[in-house]
Each structure stands twice: as C-alpha cells, then as structure tokens.
Image (tube, rainbow, N blue to C red; front, side, top):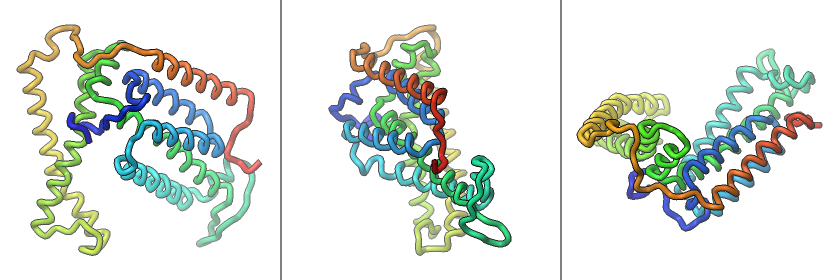
Length: 274
C-alpha cells in the first residue's frame, strides 16, 4: 500500500507511466473481449498475456497474492455450486450427454464439468488486467484522467476517494477484529468451528459500517469547508499529458476488440471438445 492510502504501488514500469484514462479503456476493452467468447483456449491465452503484463509492471507477488487466491477460490466455489445445482446445464447448451458422476438419482455430465472449468477460466482471465488497473493507477491521477475524458470532476473525485479508502476500510476491519479477539471472540482456524467463526465475522459488520459512516461524514465536512463543488470546473495538480505510449495502447486494445468481433462473426468458438 502506498503513502497515499491507496493500493497503488510505485514502480518504474511502462504501465505505470500510462495515463489513468488509458488504463480504464484497457480494462473496459479487455473485459468486453473476454465476454465475447466462451472458449477456454482464448481465456488461457489472455491469462498468460495478463500475467505477463503483471510481470512487466513489476508488481510484487505478495501484494497481488491475496486477491489472486480470492478470485481463484471464488471461481472454484462458483463452479462447484453450478455442478450441484444444475448438473446437466452443459448438456442442455451443447446438445450432447455424457454421464460422468451419478448421485441420488441424478448425474453430473462431462459437458457441464467442462462448462464449469471454462467459466472459471473466464473469471480468472479478467483478474490480471483488474490488478494492473488497481495497483498501477494513482487515485489522484486517475481522477484527473476521468475528468479529461468528460466525466464530471465531482464523480471523478468520488472515484478517487473510493480508491483511497479501500485499504483504510480493510485496516479498520482488522482493528475491530483484533479488538474482538482481545475479548475472546474466535476468528482463527482451530479456535472454534467454521460455523461459529463465520457467525463471529458477522459481528464485525455493524461496527465497521458505523466507522465507515463516520468517515464519510468527516470527508464530507472537509470538502464543504474547502468549497468543493462550488465551481463548475477545476484544475488538477497531478494531470499528465498523453504520450505516444497511451496512443499505442489504445490502438492495440481497439485492434483486440476488432479481432474479437471478427472471430465472433466468422468462427465458431465455444467450450465444446471439438
């Protein structure tokens, strides 16, 4: 976490030097390309490309590891629920039926398992570009970049504040949890059963919500005292001019979207085995 209180990590990389609006367009274009398809081959390529960009950005693995593990775990849990709730959904989509596992009068088909795996790859393929955007974009520069492309500076500043206070909310949650642990409330594995620990985590929500509301009031009062919103326009201390790298990045993402549209219209890409 940086001194600005955000998740931004300063590194001397070409991705850090891109304008915030450019990285936002890259995020939107990347996500749009991913959602055009349901093909594990394309998702695999995008995952490799995405994590290669993370390597170029020089973001330390220990910083992105928690979010990476969370997304992977979420994808696996989502796939498991899909298999249990709709065990033959993949067969309905593909028109073929290959029984894999039988249970309680039902059956999970091979097509559904492949669909669940492909869906997990789809979620994970969006992760790298999201991490790049979050960890390489300074909140103040991003706010000025949003304002550059026509977004109201009030909205842009609200986005900037949201980026800044995500780590603060996390730190506040940890402080509340430590205070509860000092009172004998169990949160760690081995201290209590899973159900009880989950119930104890719910007790954190109320004080965390109250703390967040108090923080909102403090920020709102500070902005009012400084006359925020009085003028229709404002200047930005952290605004940077667009560079040739920004132009090249936007062109590459435009080409990727064009490639996606072409493949979608000319070829049949899906998650089937053939």
